[in-house]
Image 1 (tube, rainbow, N blue to C red):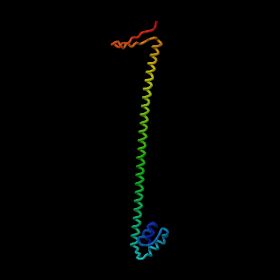
Image 2: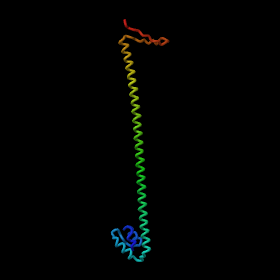
Image 3: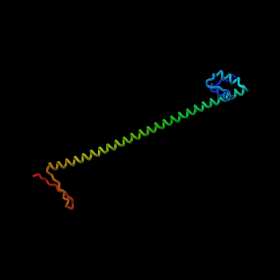
Image 4: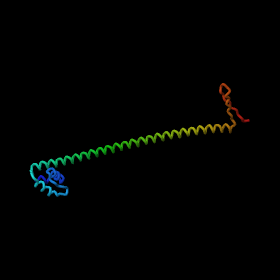
Length: 154
């Protein structure tokens, strides 16, 4: 009967169930022990072997549960790392897009500034011509497409 001191209350309840003894979670451990040892056809060696098997199965089940829990944590950790890597990659992609967009915008600004300078130069040239009295005649009739410049400085 000393073998009944090993294991958990749940193991004793399972042994009692296997032996056809009615016991519940509310039944005390000493009451379960007494019910098992006083049961009809009690054979200590058989009950000891059955109880040890129940304990071993319980331990194996606990180990399987622990291993499954560990496996699930590993899967969760790997998934978290995968998502973090995806997030980092997406962040880098967006930063690269922003840099490219900024460079494109800077190029457009430079182009616009050049166009404005070109227009300003044309404007300044025309104003200079007007102020200085020079006139450029475009003689499109001429086959050489020569331009003549005349001065109104008299």
